[in-house]
Length: 346
Image (cartoon, rainbow, N blue to C red; front, side, top):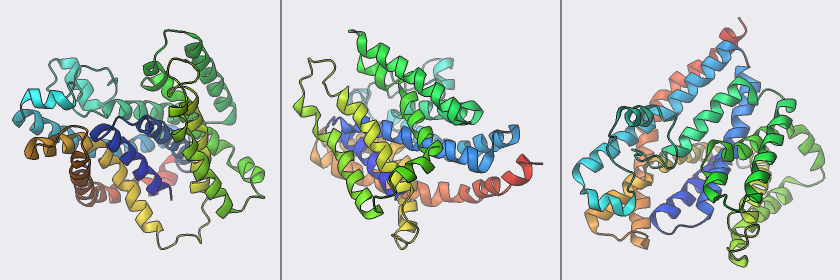
């Protein structure tokens, strides 16, 4: 069920960029971080191990998952900015353009180092991929190792967040778009792994059917709260209580989705995996699709028609990417996974 949830999160982001700057788009990014924190901690502990060869194989597999689709998105960007007038592209994203120096070229190739405020982003969503890559590396090196590390990590996150919230001038940017800001959801994901057994004991009296309904209900609550609060109250605005409440409710929902009984939704599981595969290319390609469709057909920015047709093109391109690129690399990734035990513990 987690694959379907990931695609829904990606569509939240698409909606925020192509139709309406809807605050759950930022919620979705942190939800992705929690999922990554959980999954990366899980596979490092259960599959790769914290050995040199294990870390190398983990990072190689992550490279094959992240970079090939990203390079396709870069090529898409280069074609767009070569043939579509600059003033039209600026309506959608003024940062989408040709890198104008060596540093920018390198960062747009390797992704690492691309911040949200980067002057040039060949792929507008690459700043969050930069964050993901940073924590993939940190989890593989030491952050995912143990409960003790997770406790220290959480303490540092609480200190960072508390400091920002008491500083009057602190902006949402520093609680959302930076490496330190993303540390909290990744840490929550790691906690989900380390304390999965205790969570199971705590919730053992709640049936799975009731638990999934309650977790979905809880997940929806932060989406409903922002209109109730005034933005001039720093502690009670759309970027404070509802935003961090979403981290908590997302964690509960993810735990239930990851612990779906194997006899549930057996027919749907294959589709669920495929939906999850679509989430990354959807996240990568939606800006490009929106700009192209708007230019070709004259759709206005933030219009329903742009969302429908731009979103439709995004899903079509995502299907093509999964079918012809990601699937072709899957055998290579599976061989890496299969070689883990042999190479890591040799």
